[in-house]
Amino acid sequence: MSRFALAISCLLFVSTIVRATNVSYCDNNEEYQVKVHGVDISPYPIARGEPATFSISANAGNVISRGKLVIEVSFFGWHIHSETHDLCDETKCPVAIGDFLVAHSQVLPGYTPPGTYSLTMKMLDGHKKELTCIKFSFKIGLGSSSSSSVADI
Image (cartoon, one colour):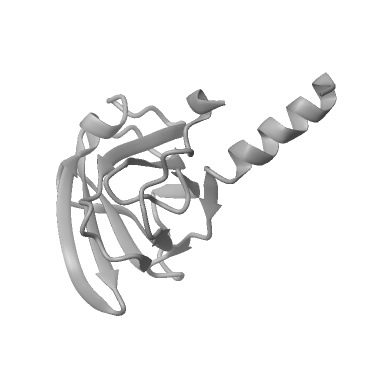
């Protein structure tokens, strides 16, 4: 196999395990201090019982010294899960003015039903002021994805 063909094969393989998802703001009329550029989910679809990483690229209009991420998950319109994380556990603090990345990884239980889920994430500053609020959908696949690691190539 030529190097070019190998490179294309690797690119196609990697593109199936990372997905940039469509993101919308909770309130399109709100002027949020943090602008979200996008969300990457890896692997995609998410495999039950395997680590999944959500990477959120954003831009801060002001320095953020501390804060919280409040996450709400729904399945078929029903609220099923809530969690709160310290912002500084998910990114380097203080967050400087400009571009930054928030990354969160976790393993979903093996009994998680497959399907499409909706996630809403609010970023709050240290005074509980809402800096941004986004929503997006993601899919959880039928089984574990033992072949989804780039290290398996």
